[in-house]
Length: 149
Image 1: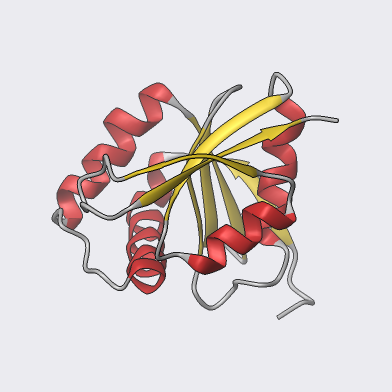
Image 2: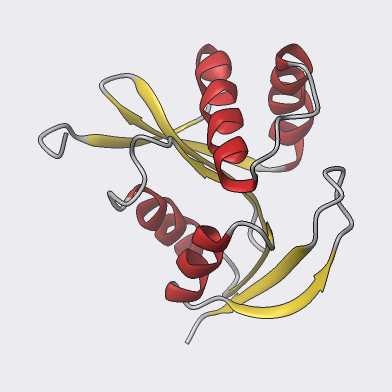
């Protein structure tokens, strides 16, 4: 797999179904819970709500969506990597791009049950600043913050 080049590109609607399929599979594996929304409503959310509020970048390998990140200068809303491509540095690459474009501070939330995400964010300099469960999954979550050095 490593001989294939990862391309980071801006999200376009042509990748909607691939992105949502990858996102749903990755999230389900991470939290052990099926997505509560239909596939179609998830595509609508991606194209019409998330894309209006955040920049969305994709990681592509041979035209296949292997990762996505939704962000602005202060917040990461979503970061998901295809379950078959985790641990290859794709998340690190996406995160570094967002850090470079930030105002020097980023916040994000992750689910408390997602220990892999916690390890990933802490390894990349994020610190816990809050806990709660204000999400539609009704799962405890953790708020993280990263501040540039």
